[in-house]
Amino acid sequence: PLLEDAAQNVPEQFRASTPLAIRATAGFRLLGRQRAEMLLKKIRIIVRQYGFKDAGVEVMTGDDEGLLQWIAVNSLLGTLDSNESTVVVMDLGGASTQIAYTVPDDIETTAWQKAFIRLLPLPGVGRMVKIYGHSFLGYGVVAARKKILQQANISGVEQNPCFPSEFPAGAEPCVQLISQLLRPKEVCDFEATSERCDFAKVWLGPGMNISNPIRPVGCSFYFYGLEDAGVVSSDANSAEVTPQ
Image (cartoon, rainbow, N blue to C red; front, side, top):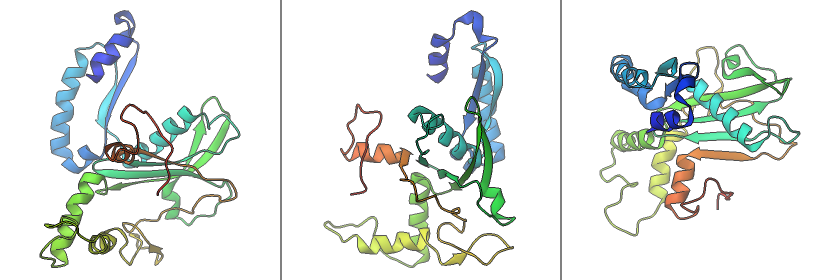
């Protein structure tokens, strides 16, 4: 369906000079290289039938996934070429979750922290920005559900409190179980540091400049969950909501 839509929007005489790229995300990264490549080969065969210029069919990295989402959302909101603060982008997928936000230009980082910060030129805007970004593989909404089931087994719980057999059931036991998973009291997953990391043993970045109002934007399952709960209209493309 995606290729059919592309073909309808690009006249046939221009397709050979129109690059078409397909990038798989975290679900493919979890498959393993051999299984992912088998599927990518089949996709390449389908793509060739449409006559576009080949810009590659491959699995993107988690860092690129978060960065491209940040660019897309801020571009759509018009914050890249204005004085308005860029937004924090949170993307909750099925297999991973991403976060990306700008950090101050003068931020000081250690050698291992530099791997999380990328210098991004903004085409047509004439400026550079520093972006903190990370993809938490295995913490998408479907993959995290699997982790919750596994965590219950590790904790020796007979009845998983997040899947109660009787209603009503209190939420607190489930909250405690998930907290063990999401906020382990462990150091960061780097040999060079003893610094604490509060989520998935990964550094969450230096934080944002709180002198300006911060606007977070949640994408993918953040939106779908609100849509399923009736908070967001089923025919809406976006909505403003509060945590409450």
